[in-house]
Image (cartoon, rainbow, N blue to C red; front, side, top):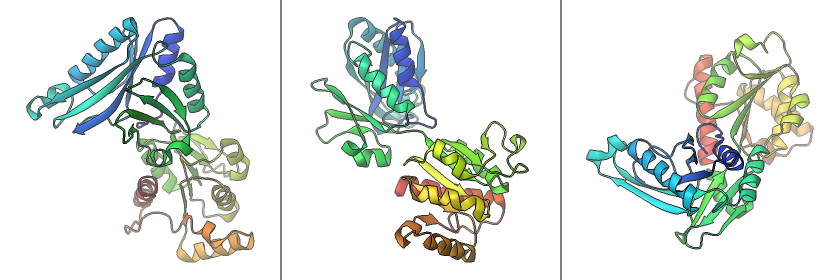
Length: 323
């Protein structure tokens, strides 16, 4: 998936059900420089409406032309676009390169019920892969167990047979920030820029104020009241910043019981040692406790709230991409 959780499959399904006809175009391979990664999608309706992007310039235009033809003939096709460095800028491939785009009409190629199931799984935050063989044109949906490495790395692409393309649809990234403190005010916009949907939890009304986090989801309650409803999964990072065990500890325990890919906790080494003692008293093992990043953030000498937020965001990114 891309920066934010897109609605491209959902839009294609809506257009198809409205009788307009719809096509999904997907970047399946790139060589050299390409402005959109493998897995990026463009939906095109039979009326010429578009949603999403596979490239830019005349590459995008050529894909749309092919998509409109696919609406008419119902045939899937693989398109290859290659440009030299001299021509690259004009067509959106900034430094030259080649891209392959898979164009599939909905209904005649992608079964409507399969696309509907994909859309339902995305809405339920269930990891799902769309698998298509470009030799036989067979299609199926698969789960995380079938392509564990691809889901872990959020990596769409061809299998070794060079015919089986796997499009990974991971749930959108989320960051749960416990403690609406000054660091959170810097961290939340950074997280959103990096593609996370933030959730801020703090039972203290003086901190959990809309004007401090404009437009964000703020819950004025304790984490153990909020997190069971929200759920923590493998696409979620949890950061505790309140420095109050009554607020932080319930979130830490919920995170340790979940598959969240990151758990970071504010506090000095001495504070963390006390935290470890409390967790051990509650029966948590050393292996479980070792999941906690504390003191939170990469050690870059941060001093100000904004610098600490930078170090936290860097460590979260490291856990996501290298964990």
